[in-house]
Amino acid sequence: MEGLKFAKTHEWVKVEDGIATIGLTDFAQKELGDIVFAEPEPAGTEVELEDMIGTVESVKAASDLFAPVSGVIVEANEAIEDDPEQINQAPWDAWFVKIKMANPAELDDLLDQAAYDAFCEEEGA
Amino acid sequence: MKQTPLYNRHVALGARMVDYAGWNMPVQYAGIKEEILAVRRETGLFDVSHMGEIRVSGQGAGAFLDWLLSRRVTGKKDDQITYAILSAADGGTVDDLLVYTMGAEDYLLVVNAANKDKDLVHIRQSLLAYKDVFKDRQAEITILDESDLYGQIAVQGPGSLDCMLQVARELGLSREEEVQLAELKRFRQMRLTLEGQDRDLIISRTGYTGENGYELYIPAAKTAYYWDLFIQAGVEPCGLGARDTLRLEAGMPLYGHEMSEDINALEGGMGFFVDLDHEFQGQVMKDRVRRRQLALVSDTKVIPRDGYEVYVQDKMVGVITSGTFSPVLEKGIAFALVDLDTPEVDEVQVLVRKNLQPFTVVKPPFVGK
Image 1 (cartoon, rainbow over the protein chains, first blue to last red):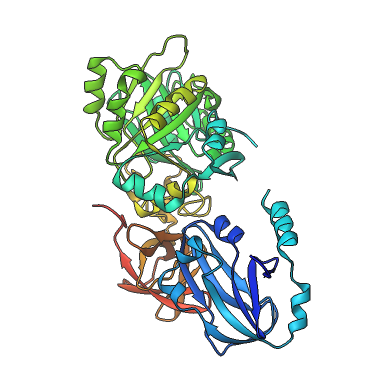
Image 2: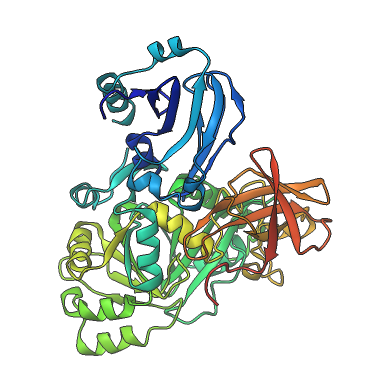
């Protein structure tokens, strides 16, 4: 997963041309188990850092996704609403929202792969 | 954390382990959905060794239990099992349990793991109160915690009898006992003496999934041997996650959700298991019914969860006590506890993340029948 950044609230972030694509990490989907419901916040929503950008539910539990960067949601992936199992099958492809970043410097506060893995190990053990 | 006799088996099978009522228990193996569907379509295997076993025996034990519980245990067939509510003097619920008749004036109470210690205290205190109220009655009663003597596994699903018969020889059943097993009725038990063990193997046709099934109470040291028989026969191991959804789909209550010290059995939808025509300790519950239970199915894809608010005509009337996604119905299902004067309606609304969502009121069970 070259070039990805991660939030401690278990979102992955991929950046291209000032747009951050955001999804749920592999670690988080495994923790949740069978995902049966997913709902991204709609396009057009303005988000501050750590605002809710989506909801995901497994058979057992509900969990929210939070904005790792501030900006405007320019696209929401409605395909995951119809087929939430995608998030279990391919968490790196099943993105939730794309955010046009207001402040790209916020990316510096996110974790890289190695730091995120270490964080999960600590949290999950 | 306590471990059941099957802890090493769960770890070897790759289960995800969690703390449940102080026990290190498997919450899932392959995945909750797969495990649920295995039980609905074929057979699943559960470790329920964390359940508590309390032996109540001695002269007058039957009459004492009649007074202690929401239903009579006396006057039943020798092999009959009674589901009953253990209620407090104020009518609140201490626990729900199964009572196995083990012999004359000899009963085994199977209780929730999380409640076992408080149950023991409650039963012992109740015995003192009983002796005080009924001075003329014989009550040479012993109350023993036998939880550590037994492991317990549940074999559940439409294929469970076939599985049981497939391993009957290894279970130690004779030809006649195989016939007895095949003909065992619901809420009945059979017992097998095992060589070198001071406790019998109990097989009962009971469960917590709504499917046909059997529960085996096994002398602790032999539990892994019996577990392995079913795993080798290809039965799918299932965790507590699947168990909780299966019981809710089947419309069965869970202590701490549908009933508690604050929610009496009549409020929690267990009126069928409360015999108000007999004298018992928690009888006052009939005068303390302030709420009632509703069973709800979501009209949309939303999933109700424990604690969500329930509305009728824009007025909050109660809360969800258990809610989940039913993989069989592919819908959200829930029990709600609402004010007694809530109007009879076909539809209610549940507050799910700031939005009121429509739910249909149904008659449980949610799945089956």
